[in-house]
Length: 187
Image 1 (cartoon, rainbow, N blue to C red):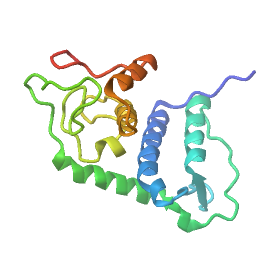
Image 2 (cartoon, one colour; image 1 turned 120 degrees about the vertical axis):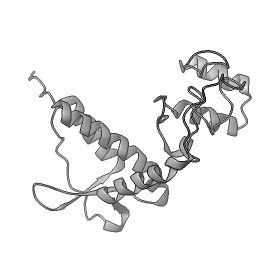
Image 3 (tube, rainbow, N blue to C red; image 1 turned 90 degrees about the horizontal axis):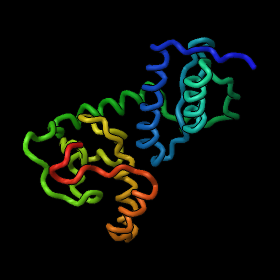
Image 4 (cartoon, rainbow, N blue to C red; image 1 turned 30 degrees about the vertical axis):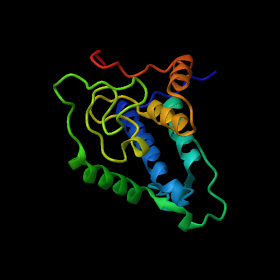
């Protein structure tokens, strides 16, 4: 068994950023019918078409194995079905910048009382920082404390399907999710 190549720390950071950007782009462009991204290859100068999952798996492989995965080019791709990587990144950046005005740091005062899992979605459930209006739908982490917002999206989806708060809390506890701190507790 051969040893895997170690990835350079800067390359690792770039790949992690690309994964985060890919997730944000997919959240915005997949519902609009785009199948993935097109990237101009720095080696051959040709457009390479990647489906969302293919590029995600390729980046994850690079993080694990230290080298990019060889892939087959898309068979007769329809260019209009793919978003340009640089365009998509710029679009996501502009969304982030335009929503910056909506953000507020966490308040210094004590947390207001709210249910542990269900509550005010205009603020982070962990640090109480004010989030951009579309934070739960398009952001992965709180921009202040770094808390993962995915568990709150799951809670909202279950609640939206008519689950009672107690049933949602029980399921989240059984699945091993750590709930946001209760009012007055430290996060």
